[in-house]
Structure formats: structure tokens, C-alpha cells
Length: 114
Length: 115
Image 1: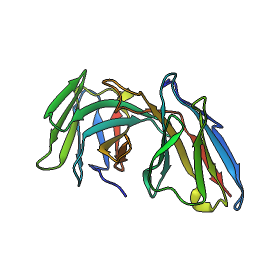
Image 2: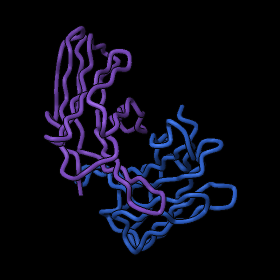
Image 3: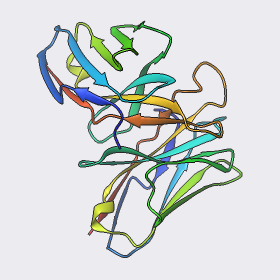
Image 4: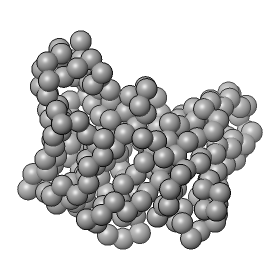
């Protein structure tokens, strides 16, 4: 079952604009991660934010986490055509025996128009 | 390139058949995770192995099984295949310890088509 739900499902913007994607989840988490997937290819880890953190930056990426609302957002600033991809949030929760299970949302498909 | 390799890239087979997907984790990573990605179900966690031992099971069907070998490569076996098993199958690995131990590095995937 899906834990994270991304919103919107699809987003189309012009190059140079900012893109914001949101993720909501249902249960307690250890951390939340964002991944990118270019069409039909493997996922690439972008950024991880721990449950005790509220905001994190990495280059043009900014992630926020609100555990009281069980939500996160990913902001990509000054978007480029190369940012065109699907973006997934994944919640990590301890599942026992030293294992952290990632549960992925269905993703936001971002199109950046040159 | 994540350092995780998967073979084959594409697999086309018929219903009722059995296939084996192979994954080699990044050098030094002890954990291997398997995921299934389909249009209707999204990305679903199947199973996690750590240093040869099964650590967690997700939405893995009884027709599917996996193992991790002493050299740390892993195989996912899918049997009695059905049309609905057509999907992208990913494996991922993660470091044993350290600041990136919660991060998973994904392979390029195996696209399975069941006809």
C-alpha cells in the first residue's frame, strides 16, 4: 500500500520557474526521502530529511517536513529542462531486524519546458 | 551510474514460466532491496536482505522468492508468471553504516513482459 501521496500528479512549468511538489503520509516515520526517476530508469536519491528536522537544502533543492501535519514539500528552484522527471517521496520506518522499509508514493511527473 | 547492476535489462516470457532476475549491489553494501514498479500499483517494496539473511518482507507474492549469496549478489525468482507480473523490477543497495545508511542506491531495473 502507498504511504506517501504526492500532489500534484503532474506539473508543467517553464524553464527558470520554481517547482513545488507536496507529499503527505499516514504513519510515524524515521525519515523522509525524495527520489527522481527519469523515464523508465532507476531512481536517484535526491535528499533525506530526518523526522527531527524541519528544513533541508541541497543545491537548488529545498525540502521541508511538518511531522504534525504528516507532510513534506520539495522545491526545485530555477528549473531546467534536465529536471524533467518523476519525483517520488519515500517514507522510511523501522520494520524490525535492523531494516528500514521505504514506502513510496505514486510520484509527481514534472515537465520543464525550455 | 549508481554502482548497482541488474541483469537482464529486458525479459520477455510467457505466462506460467519462471524467470530469475539478478542484482549486484554497490561494492561494500550489505543490504539489497527488491521493488516492483507497475503503472497501477506504483513502486512496491518486495523484500530486503542483509548479508545473506532475509530482514523484511513487503508485498511479495508466494510465487516470488529471493536470496542473497555469500558474494552479496541477489536473485529474485518469479514463478508461475501471470500477465499482471509485467513490471519494472528494481533492486537497491544501501551502506551498512554511516550518514548515508538510510539512502538506497537503485539499479537500472529489469523490464519484465509476460505475454
